[in-house]
Image (cartoon, rainbow, N blue to C red; front, side, top):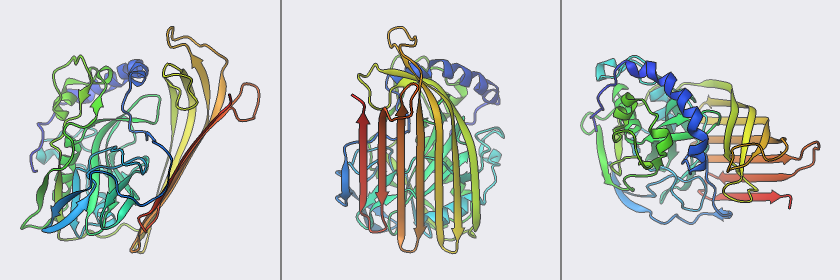
Length: 409
């Protein structure tokens, strides 16, 4: 697991701005065609669930038998969202992994990476949807710790960590922010896995006798796909980095993976980074998308425009790591005729509210996430349609999930 891809030329950095401008012009079509964005795809209502998902498997990690679900989920249904492709063992709870990565700089030139973004990125706490994982030891656990190398956009490496008992299970991916939205499209599992392995080696904390091993094949390979409309606009240097096929692709491109997870064995621990870490930014929505709820058909399209403010605070006090995230905004909605691409109705507004609270301490992990999307009719303030989603997982490994959609007939 010490292999890295060949470094791209400096031309990547120049071409990337042109790529973002081009992808914005076609991303609406990609979304309509079924773009697998990272935003959660919630399933049926599940209440108070501790039942294991299908597909929990035995894995030997650090010489100890473990039983884990080799995927993450967006809810408690057992529907796979992302593959588990990194497992930390030894002194490796999520707080220790976070501390180790936060201490690193972004200089990877000695390993063949150019000194340009995102390959000179540094690690910080990440804004992202909470997800869940499962182990026999801890049952359901939530992603109380999320890290990013880079920024929310235009591209970043994203790492979710799950305190699964004696181990920390994780998913790492390299992803693109879809212009005009807050959704990300995963471009590679393997590139992100290799970056995490490289950076953990750079910490100097790995067990010298057995620093990195592998679980062997534990999940599907390939897993998910990049819509061809997005893939065909990627700069050639970036295609080379993710090991993709030649462009243009005539069909969606599977996201390659060897189906295994790197096992990273930490013998030491970096000093914790106490205190608060705050971030706040605004996403300007401006995109034609399938109507996200209360849709009359798959071709029920809307243009969404306007700002949504995102704020997150991560606090480490003693051994307790907590985070709070809030997003809110009022965006303009215009119905769009799917056959002509022209407006088909009067503009109205919708209110967006997201909230997350997470904590991790010696007793375990707790997450609570809620989303509300409220449509307001033209010229009025009464509700027209409303989507409410709630996901909670406690330190006892038991979770609640609710998905409520109410539509004005």
